[in-house]
Image (cartoon, rainbow, N blue to C red; front, side, top):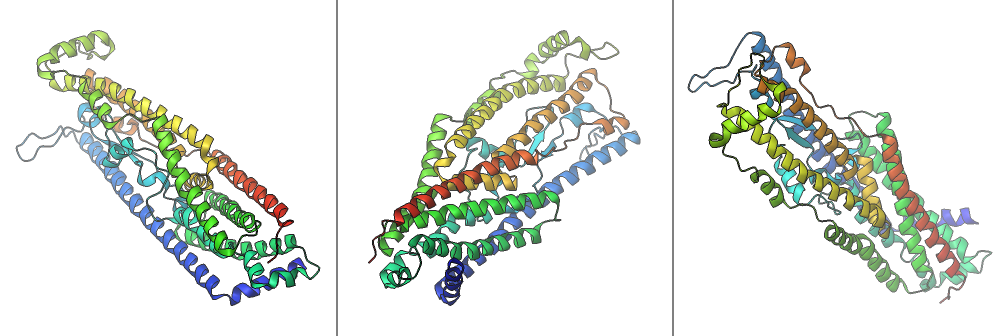
Amino acid sequence: MLTKIIKTEWLNLLAEKSFALLAFALLMLIAYSVWSGATWVEQRRSQTQTLLDKQEKDRAEAKEKTEQGFTGSTTPGNFQPDPSDPYTMGMGLQYASMPFSSGAVFSIGQADVLPLDAGVTVSTLQRTKADKEGFENPLSFLSGRFDLSFVIVYLFPLFILAISFNMISGENESGTLRLLLSQPLTLKVLAAAKLVALFVPVISIVLVAGWVGTSIWADSVSTDLVIRSALWGLLVISYAAFWFALAVFVNSFGFSSATNAVISSASWLILVLILPSLLNVAITAAYPVPSRSELVSAVRSVNLDMRRDGSRIIAEHYQDHPELIPKDGKTSTEDFGLAFVIVQREQKERVDAVEARFGEQLRNQQSLISAFRFLSPSIVAQEASNDIAGTGLARYQHFREQVKQFDAAWGDYFVPRIFRKEKLSATDFDSVPVFKYEEEQLASVARRVLTGTAFLLAAAGVLILLGFKRLRHFNLA
């Protein structure tokens, strides 16, 4: 009986023009969102690669000039720095970049808010424009770009509620519910059949469209992409299950279709928009991040005039670090460049202190999000999408920790050479620190995603059980 009803429902769906139009609209939205997200990812990836290629080319040219014995040019209009000078190389901006994961198309996430590149020098840690903006507002619950996660998290529930808000009330109002129940059929079985009949084609459309779209834009179908795609599929299924279960629960009260539509719309508004916004405000108020002005103050607090205090600064530094005295024992306390390096290193320490507080507040915010995200299924879905795509805060923090390590290695390599006035040889260029991003373990990603999907499935199960229980008291028209 159940199979027969499901087949009948499918035939009714095929004959329903409104369902066909809604399904086509959803399919087009998914296609466009995949294209939009993939285009943005490719543009950012191309920009980063251009930057890294230029950096590698400049280093190769510096090594070649050093091999040829070139020591720079001070000719007016044709100034060229000495590539063997550790001060010149150490103060040069080196970029550390976080590559996109294989599943980046699934969600832009925080990638358009938090910077994917960080500049490192002997002086204070350089920041891009995006980094400065991200420092002011490092947490954004609502993605501003039209990507696949936007369609799934925000629009997909509306589609589900639009086709299921009257799954029982419509039959009741048309008078066919009494006729159906006159057969050897219970209302629970009918509701289950309608639920399956809607769930299967809708999920099939979304999964096929999403997987095909992402595989087309992927560089290659790797094991990593397959695992991330499987996690995304599980997330979509569990998220859809929650909203279908909510529709069954709303229908179980026996209200009219119009009332069901209002309740469903209000539920979407509260769970998807209002609760995340309120939670964002509460978390930001509880753990505010340091303002940009604090960062500027930290730099300006190192108030030293290098021309006036340069000699004293250098003399005290050599006194505190005798291992940095040149091999010939000759130290110059009038070297403006050395005083500049010392001041810059002092500023870096002050900035790092502010950065540490920023990171701590960010971790506190993330802890609160993890604790309260289950108040809204949209937060769970958005965070899981970001984790699958590798564009969430967890992966970004993993990247920033590696940037700090690279920054320290860069300073440890060049600063002693600057003070010892050691020239770089051609072979020294081979040992210059190079940033290599180490990907976080996929098991950690899967654990975070599976926690979210388990909650969504559990919530869906509770709603289904409550809805089926109420169906026993359903009042027929």
